[in-house]
Amino acid sequence: MNYKGLELDKFQKDAIKNIEQNKSVVVSAPTGSGKTLIADYIIERDFKKGIRVVYTAPIKALSNQKYKEFSRSYGEKNVGIITGDVQKNTEALILIMTTEIYRNMVLSNDPFISEVSYVVFDEIHYINDIERGYVWEESIIFSKPNVRVLCLSATIPNADEFARWIEAIKGHEVVVVRHEERPVPLHVNFYDAELGVTTLKNLKDAMDIPDYHKIIPRNPGFRHRQKQKIPSHFELIKDIRSNLPCMFFSFSRQGCQKKAFELFQKNVFPMNPEISAFVRGKLSGTSPEINKLDSARLLRQVLPFGIAFHHAGMLPILKEIVEELFEKGMINVLYTTETFAVGINMPAKSVCFESLRKFDGISFRLMNSKEYFQISGRAGRRGIDKEGFVYIMVERKFFEYDRVKKIIQSDTSPITSQFRLSVNTVLNLIMQHDEKEIDEILCKSFHSFQKYGKNFMNRENIVSHNAFYNYRKKLEKMGYAQGSNLTEKGVFASKIYSDEILIGEMFATGFYTKLNEYQMLMAVACLCYESREKTEFFRKHHSRFTDELKRMIWRHEYLKHEKRFREIDDLTALVHP
Image (tube, rainbow, N blue to C red):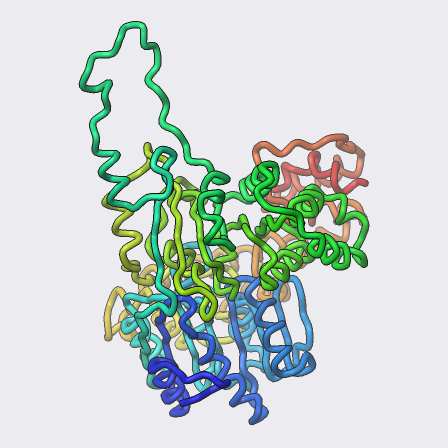
């Protein structure tokens, strides 16, 4: 079978054959093997028939890239996008959105959803994400019975279990299609301060050599044992110059910027005036304030030398500049956080890891195999490179041979349910469903399926049911619900998808009517601001308005417990000017 001038692989043919039979399909195949071609087939087929298709992605950057890609293929007027940042052409037949937006639509029973034939869930393994995984689960549970799903992922060891769950709750056949072979072979190397680029075995052998000072008693005059060297990122880049472009993954936004500047200072690459002209052109029509930002100034300094950084803390226009230059092949080294590894079709010849240890919001831990393969899969460009390269920087004191070997050998991490009820879900369940339907929905989670097996629909999931009834009791007490109905305040909060009660107490009551414009801006700033321990504020602007706002909050039974309002004095430094 030939599609878009390409002879399709067997897994692509198998997936398309089942789609033509109106089945849902779960595709598990390595990064870069052509999974999205299957989504393209559905979109082109249904677009020609005048049927709506939804393409969902876990991050805005991937949604933006898909919007540009589909707009080129089908015309801008036929493609729409909805993310937290942008809404364009929302009535289009081809609609791209973040998975959260789709989940919100199905949860609130948006009439638009009944017109959809297929929903593509790109990077479906995000169902594993501790903070956001429940979004994917709810998206599938609340989808209309007529909707079919195409789930795409690099590797899902328990894809059959996942497919059987979807099949059980949606009542139609779900087929698993697997493909194991990478289109571009991958070579995995390590980078050690003493050995340089080396293999895992050579690194272990070197580290197994006993320490001289443990065997021979130290000279009393030898005051300190020599510290183990830490590998240098710019020395690694110099060593792998023949295998560029490279994506260098760091787990810190600040670290990405710092490393980009350090490499720039080493004068490794010549200047490219074409890049300077491109950046000037892109920024010429933007606000002068953007050019004054530290991130913008630093980017303009390093980009002409083919060095860039990319992370979620950058303004969209700056990210767009980096992405476009990378696509043009004008970036030698891109320092980026792991969000750049999620589905965005921007592979490089090499991928470097600053470390396999990452901070997950609670503590430092080793990456799991799924996270590792998600990132390393970016190495090797199909049709350009004959092979891809991975380089993992090693700090010997944190090196654990057996665990590292297990992570890089194969993706063994199964997807597991992270299902949890949110206030918004409970509000919408009360508003949209009767007691019997609520009971059935609470039994439908992937968590129930993994816990109880094929009889899960007949077993009460105590965790979910208890959470629901506890939430409902609290919502009734606070005036958001009355029995099987929502109050006016409850209906308001059902349209809010984060901090539902906090925002409800502020803006679905008379509280906000007592605020002047400045106080309201201060309150919203507190809701949005994420405090950091080392952030310093200068020139705070104390006033009677902020004193009044604090008094109103302290008198409110619910708002007085919210820690974010303790930032009011600091945030005057931003909001007052």
